[in-house]
Image (cartoon, rainbow, N blue to C red; front, side, top):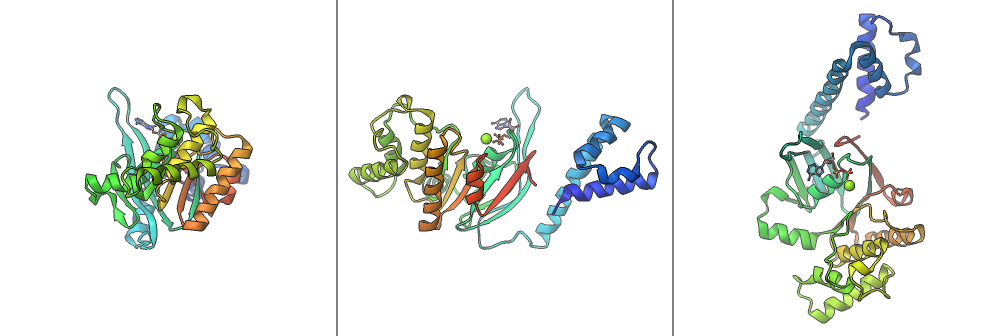
Length: 300
Ligand SMILES: Nc1ncnc2c1ncn2[C@@H]1O[C@H](COP(=O)(O)OP(=O)(O)O)[C@@H](O)[C@H]1O
Ligand SMILES: [Mg+2]
């Protein structure tokens, strides 16, 4: 549903009813966006009026989503990822609180490949962190792989993070004093595989991402793009049911990006893996089943 349009209509009709001074209702067709309309309101009635409009938008959105939830529209039992009213507020000392996510509802079914796009600071990384049990939401429910994260104990959460999901972090998060091969094989430490099996799978994965010549290099001896590929290999190590990738081709040239996109696509086809990928790369977005747009902590 396009809430922006609805609000615009409401504002338009309110202004029309009141016959607002200086507001030319004949030229409404020429107003292309709610943002411009709001600017006109704030220019005319001051910044406070604009803040009120923003709050009306916000409350309206929340009410609409609550109603939908109450009607059971979000009770999608087949969804491998199911978020309901998910909010995250960051509260750092001496800083004003940041609403990084606001009442997000989302259902993703198994095997879907979904792109997440949105401006910097809109909440994309926070969204992945909540879905990967790397941080705790302020409110709302997160059900992943048919389990409520809030109901898991710390042992279950550790297993979930290492076995159920694979993370490609925006900043790679490699261990600096381990080689590329070791960084990948260590992800399999808690499995039944022996050392040799772990090393040979790690080598195979590094080959798939095009790093067969770099296996014994330390992260500091690798370029950003190479480190990124090590982190992709590590995310794939335990055949996770879900992969969260935060701008996985951000440091890669276009040829290597294509290789990684094809690899994701192949994994998804071969194993039915669900893949959520934050990206600015149109090629990736095109390969995905759908694109989620996120802005100011909301899916729009
Ligand atoms: N640990 C944190 N403490 C305080 N604020 C944070 C923290 N992490 C993220 N934020 C803030 O939350 C908002 C969303 O951040 P983020 O999810 O990283 O956005 P994106 O990945 O879309 O660039 C931003 O305003 C950011 O500054
Ligand atoms: Mg980010």
